Length: 160
Image 1 (cartoon, rainbow, N blue to C red):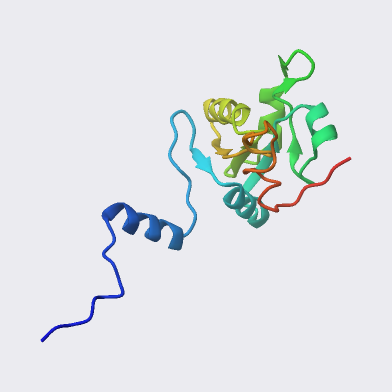
Image 2: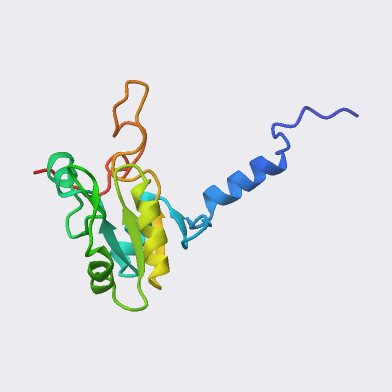
């Protein structure tokens, strides 16, 4: 007796893990020097539920020209022009994050937010980096906002 070919194909272990991860609750990815990396969507979920404080560490100029997240804490890490460190960053951060809350750090592309997540961890906070940042990585034409980031994923933001 012969059977028709199966309409299903066996999944390799990597495919099985990928399917399990996509069906599972979003999670933080471990990182060295801070609590982890999270997707913009998970950062938004934590922020909206009150589990975390969202800190936008971009410069005032970036928020004014590119856009900002309403009700996020605007706390500059490096100020434009010159990108000098904010000497009051530590005190301002500690004042903005209530004890026991997570803190999620957002910058343009997810680079400065790693540095600030590391610094927040040194200060005793449970800190996460928002992957992709506000604008995401540049596309083939060198433009941001088309391949990832807070705005790309349709999360709340305003301009002006």
